[in-house]
Length: 127
Image 1: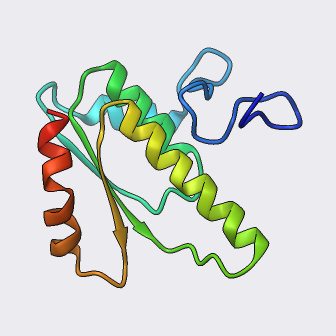
Image 2 (image 1 turned 90 degrees about the vertical axis):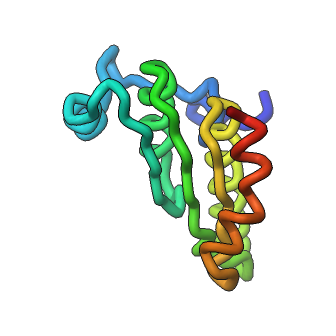
């Protein structure tokens, strides 16, 4: 199965990823959700170096919170390990995009306003 882990778990950052552990959300996600007003619009800034932002995005998506993810690309692709990390990051970004989050893949060599402007048509199209 593409994207499957050797231990039988779901692929990195995919929608098939388990969003819950033992039937419960991560405590950090629960605390954050408890603080959000019902009409909140969420902007998440993360380099997506682990799955936690995808878990948070899934929890927000399940509760119909609008989400925009700004992800600075801080991963070099010079070594095999860095290339794996870059692929995992892109997979997480795609997973969030498939959940309906607006996503901004920000190459840090580009000013943030340029990255937002470049992503604006994509963000507006998904609304």
